[in-house]
Image 1 (cartoon, rainbow, N blue to C red):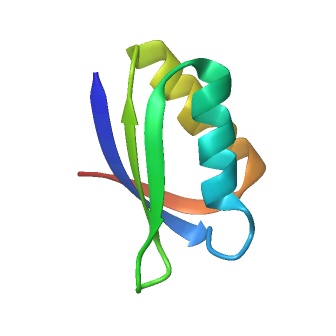
Image 2 (cartoon, helix red, strand yellow):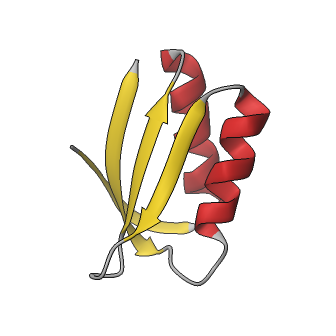
Length: 71
């Protein structure tokens, strides 16, 4: 499964992208995060659906995310 999301909230300048990189490695999936000019972060994830869900849940626990927009 592939998932493309835009993450809103306090997600730039707080180690969000590094955490995405660590989590995808820990969960054994593929992914990357890109800072956007509007202060959001674009995230691409690929792997088993339950592992993608666990990755997103972990990000929501660790960061002040106000909204996750599916693309």
